[in-house]
Image (tube, rainbow, N blue to C red; front, side, top):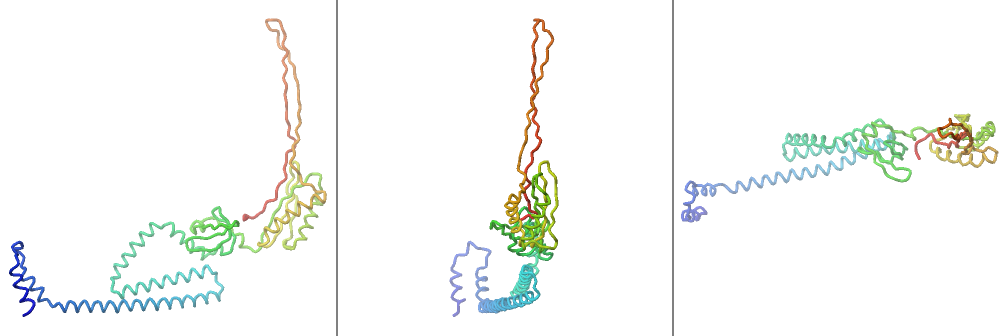
Length: 345
């Protein structure tokens, strides 16, 4: 006696009037006579095959991680020997890692038996959607690549761009990170930074400083010039070549302006600028060189005039008086303050 002989009496006794068009006996017989062990065997074979593929994928991921890490360290050593910029080397190594991992993912998809054509179509549509949604980010990415290639500035340079200035702390693919003199962190988008104006004050080793000092008309210009040359000679940070330049810059209504230009190392720029301002302020009065101070001279001139009017019908004469006041400003001048030729603070 088998399972079919036990099940058939139950099926014949069951009410099947509600399903007149359905051959329940034949359907059940077909299902019973279907080789169930064969189906289970197919499922077992599929599971075994999938397990082998999954284990192979995990082994490939582990080996790829080790290989990509070793390759990155090897490339970093080669780049360090050639003294390439750290930002560029970091970008190139990361780009290589992303490219290699994309290849690994493609291999894993093929091993698992996923249709690669559908995956390509999926990535293409997703790339189009991301490209439309992140157009600004892609522009910043392109700007970051161009900055790393053409190197208008590097990490550690002091730059000013887009109304901000500071020391470059890092250059990423999307942003350039600045640290301002008051220790604020500013993120500049690379797209606008590369396409806009960038002032790099650290690019050159030397820089020129310019002052303008104002003295009164009663002071001796030659004496002021010799004193300034002496003060500049006492500062070892002022470069001898090019030589300091001192000249009479402008003759104002109440003062004369003396322009002073010197060359210093870029790192000494602000120290020399502020120190000379302080020394000149203390030294000029001690040598009877007084800077011009703001002053104003006012002259008051009052004129009275009288006029006789024609006789009125009443026969009386009226006297008309008019007073005029004139203010004349003969002199009004102020000392010109020294201004740096650089842009950073």
